[in-house]
Length: 406
Ligand SMILES: *Cc1c(COP(=O)(O)O)cnc(C)c1O
Ligand SMILES: [Zn+2]
Image (cartoon, rainbow, N blue to C red; front, side, top):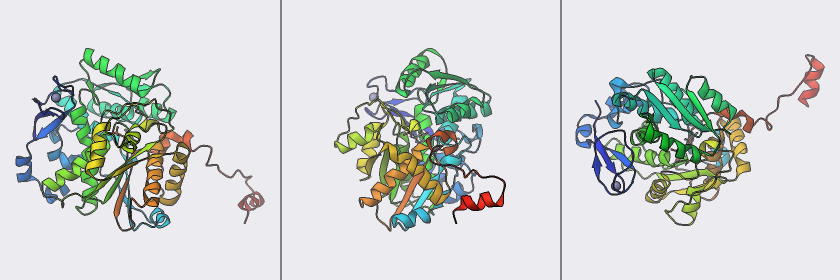
C-alpha cells in the first residue's frame, strides 16, 4: 500500500486530498505529496529495500503509488559506474557516472512515468498524455502501451528524428506542434482543462515528480548507503535536481543514511540556461528565455521548478554552470571514448559542467562525485554524425594497411 496522506501547497501550505491536481486553488502554488513518514519509519529498512524488485519499485514505500498496481517495464536500478579514465584525466579519485541512459525507453523519464502512469490507472484514467521535450514522449508511449492505455504525446515539431521514431514505435497519437516546448506546454495545459486525460507532467505532476527521487535513493544505495559529496544534474524544468536532493534527505530523515552534505550542481547549455543565469545574478527569479540549443531535451525556457532548483542549490551550497553550445558534442564524444557510454546532448552538458567544476576547484579530488547521464546517444545521432567517421577501405590487405598509417 502507499503511504500518501494528501497533497500540500509548496507556497501557502494549504492541504488537498490526493487527486489529479497540480496547483493550489488559492495561490496557484505547486502541490506536493504528503507522506505518513511515521508509519514509513516503522517498516522501512535497508534490508526491506534491498530485498525488493530490481527496479524503482524497491522504493515503493517512498513513492505515491501502490506497487500492486505498478506499470512496470523495469525502470531504474541502472548502473552506477566508477570512472577510471575520465577520473584520471581530471585528477579525481572518486568519480561515478550514473548511467540512466539504459532505462527501458532510454532515458531517466521512465522513472517519473512509471509512477505517473501507475497513479493514472489508480485514478481510473484511460488516456495518458504529456508535453515533451523528447524523452518524455517515448516513455509515456511505452508505459501506456504496457498499461493498455491510450496515449497522446505532444512534442515540438523540430525534435530530433530519433526521438520522434522512439515514441512513434509504441503506437501513441503523436502531435508535433509548430512551436517551442513552452508553446507545447501552454497548449497541453489548455487541453488538460478540457479533456479528462492524465497529463503526466501537468495534472499528474505532483506524483510524476516523486519518481525522480529514485535517482537519489539508488545512488545512495549503490554507494553503500552513503550520499555522494557532489551531484551534477542536467536541468530542464528543474524537477530532477530538486527531487534527487529530496530523495537523499528522506533517506537521512528515516535513518537509512547519515545526514546529507551533498552539493547539488545544475548543468544547462548556454542556449537555454535560465536557471544558471538567475544563479549567477544571485536571484531566485527565473526570467524566461527563448531556447536555442543543441540540447533539445533541456530546452525549457520557462522552467516550472526553476525557483525550487535554485533554492536547492542554495540550501546544498552547490552551484550552476552553463556549458558552451560547441562543447556539448565534445562532451558526448569524450564520455564515449573514455568510459564507453554513449549519451545524448544532456549528458554532453553534464560532462562540460563536470570539467568546469573541477577546473575551478568547486569539486575536489578526494570527494565522491556523481555525474548523472540521463539520456541515450542513439536517439540523437545527428549531433555527432559529422565528428565520427569510419575508415573506408577496399577489401584488400594493401588498402587496409595504407589506411592504418602505421
Ligand atoms: C527531461 C530531461 C532532463 C531534465 O529533467 P527536469 O526534471 O525537467 O529538469 C534531463 N535529462 C534528460 C535526458 C531529460 O530528458
Ligand atoms: Zn497555495
